[in-house]
Amino acid sequence: MASRQKLSGIQKQVLALYRGFLRTARLKAPEERRRIESVVSAEFRDNARNVDRRNFVYIEYLLRRGKRQLEQLKNPDITGLATLEVKK
Image (spheres, rainbow, N blue to C red):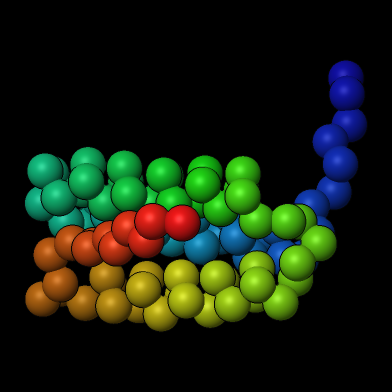
């Protein structure tokens, strides 16, 4: 049986944030839930691909921003997420 590499503290925070978004999405309407899951998945995947793993300052910034977004999404009056695409 292969042993898994232990996750760092920051990796655990990222995974907890991702799970938090998915759990919160379950509380929304079905069509909005799918949209939230899609946006969250794409955002996390994009950041995993494009953010240098050693850039801790930027990763911590993304974590803080994500936590604020998650808290807003938990509000029952909020129905979904909006995304802003910036062309590079």
